[in-house]
Length: 338
Ligand code: AMP
Ligand code: MG
Image 1 (cartoon, rainbow, N blue to C red):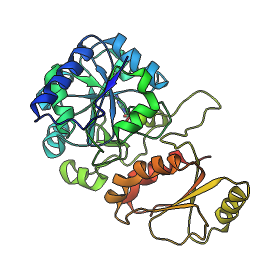
Image 2: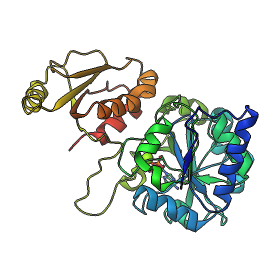
Image 3: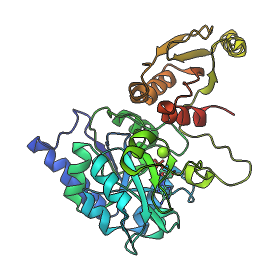
Image 4: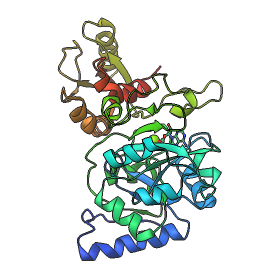
């Protein structure tokens, strides 16, 4: 059984919507699953202190048990309560970026069940910058473990409709807060080492973080922290549309040939560019902004649309090498068919 506020999006300032938030809080307190909007993507939330509720998240998503969850809290004080220690870098980054799309990985307190962290001794914490997410966190009075509200490896949802299409029958309630604004997942920063280290590039760039805490540990994140599935033979494909996704640079003739062959079979081809001419004939063309944050905001919505259009192949222009494009490049590289 599930309901979804189909009529209109929720607003915590509308008195009638307080009832929906209270219903969501009741479901969460009883160990159920509620999908809710954040500024990044829609989350699939459960009581982070309840191992049985957390197990439901993994089951609903088909997520490997080795991939830890981000725990969402209403404010910095709530975050500190879940941390065994709260380094100075956490204090500085939280005051600079929270509420916002930055996840801080810190040593976990005994209160946080191992189930939430995939057995790791550290927990990822974040205060989301979305009025519905914050209203829900306050109404429930509990930390909420929440990965993206989609089946594992699929594209992340940026509207309530995307959530419903992916996992409607596996959640108890979906709160509709309209399309998300940031449109891409949070940056994850590990604060358990000698220097802060980015485990997953995201909405907040490395440069902005370095301005607050100084030089980051430049080593790339270990595969496990990137959520890679470690079983042999399993690919790292993640954040992927149903269509086959191929990255292409200008002057790369092979994708033009691939696109022609696909269309010759009667299958639709989608094309996503940041402005380059890839020499690909496509049935549907989407142009993303040349500015990385604006492109990130449109990225998943565009790929969802191309899936809706029935594209079998989606050719995407390889994003620029510039670090400002790290998050978009990361998601596209991992969505690409190996
Ligand atoms: P998702 O829930 O799909 O947005 O993925 C959350 C990601 O955050 C994981 O794949 C990890 O990269 C990272 N993460 C969350 N919690 C931790 C943690 N305790 N330690 C290391 N990385 C984490
Ligand atoms: Mg995800």
